[in-house]
Image 1 (tube, rainbow, N blue to C red):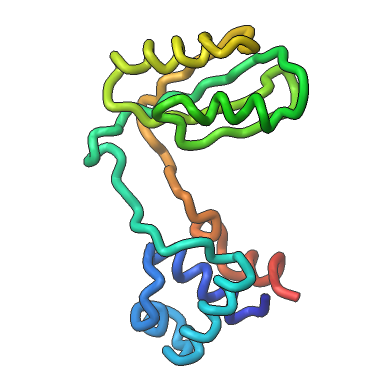
Image 2 (cartoon, rainbow, N blue to C red):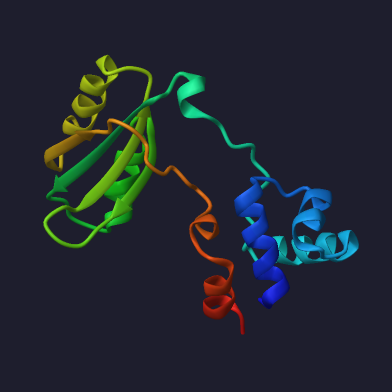
Length: 160
């Protein structure tokens, strides 16, 4: 990646769009160059998709619960993780080091559904216990990491 690629990715993160016209307005990079570079970034796997972002609260999934899962399992962690990922509402899951084995983030429709979520986790045979935290307010819910960086930092850290 070079500086133009990083500028495009930062603009996509800040604007929330991959529109070549909007990216041109933001970066000054010619639209034809933007098309070419976006295609290359897709081929390289840097850009994974063109999904629309959703407002989970407006959708009706405004309750966010963070669950720490402590487990005693044998075999690869990926096999056990598949069971966690099969629980409805799980949007993110992380295999972690330390006292907690997995951290799971779930988006739910109401506080009443939290009990179902925890019951589903505890029904998995190798789950020893869970520790759940309700979020009160989202201070930052950014799925595009470059939006949280200054452009100069990204250029310094990510360019060849």
